[in-house]
Image (cartoon, rainbow, N blue to C red):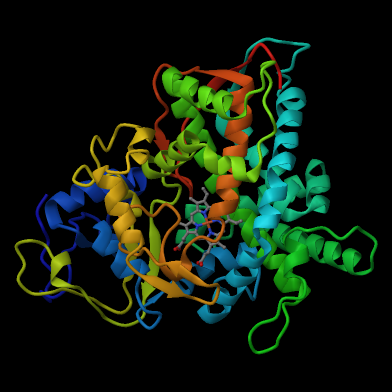
Length: 498
Ligand code: HEM
């Protein structure tokens, strides 16, 4: 392929493509990382590609991440990039269907619902759900002590929604999971796909089902709030309870509708990200009996009772499980659930010379109207940054002096910023950003770690695992979230159920 030089030489190079409007859609869509790494070889860290009529400028590496995720609101906008996808699913008035300044306050409200006290109450509830799911739904229990072959992604999707609803979403949601809610979720989720992102308004049945489900789910949350207000249900220390009574800085309270839509947004934000992450982590564990045994020994040494049982895992205990923590971190390094983070360019962005292609003297400008894309997964798997970048090595996170870990530390601590919920590390120039960075950084990280750690601990303590496919599952990039293909494993109950 040859480089097509833009007429205006201050614009980034355009990725060569044959079909004008379609551009590099197939090349990018099939395997975005292959596309990014190959383009980086040819064009450097900054290049533009055509994606079904859109001009998308990719900025790679820590500096590229910073350009996009650390950009000023006058230059980059998430709401202009995402609202056509998210508003029909979450509903109006929240997240990207409001000015950024309001989203920042909504994130502060969400943060205030995820207190240490709330997080401390979650591990026992998550454990109960795991126990019930493995023993009854999957049917692996002492009365039938055989192995069971399971589609891991399917199982984790069920377990994540069960545990998220038992904890964050509230007991009414958990109770109705066996009924109408599951179908509503399925229909809503069917409207949160790359097709919806590329084509917001197609006359397809799935779009109609999405709209019907959005209305019904929003009404469902409204009813919960109404019933709680009437005192018909017990008050719960969950996210709904926390959001009730929150007020914007100008004194305007969140309406019940706003709360309903925030709850839908949280449900969608945490579901596939966490189910994919737990699936990938467990696949690596099934693939590496040695690592699995080390995790088991970590549990035995720290929490094992002399009779072979374990004491219940607490929120504080999770922080003690260093190898478990490293396993999740490493999973997110190699399988960042979100491979592309988009922003709409609102005003021309001058590119620092350090990001320009080595042969170019002039600095580039990313013009208004383009999209700018960050792909933190590229720096997370860059062989120039990480030793044996393609090898799953949790222990790299335990080596304080390790080059990569040191670089991450240095970058993450570089800048403190306060968006209204206390100073946080902006970390926009970090090579490790599975939870994003800057003003749109994830607020669910601690919840996700608590949920993932408790689920994996439950499995490690109680089951052995085996991969049931001839080779390690490949990646499916055709969904919004990076998922494993055909992730079959078998679970076998350890001798003693605890
Ligand atoms: C934002 C990843 C779990 C709620 C983000 C972003 C990423 C991310 C990369 C930044 C998106 C952007 O800049 O456009 C993840 C991963 C998760 C996870 C890897 C699990 C392993 C969760 C959970 C929740 C959640 C469990 C809710 C409880 C949010 C919210 C935002 C966000 C509210 C803010 C969106 C914005 O400001 O634009 N997440 N997330 N996430 N996430 Fe998560």
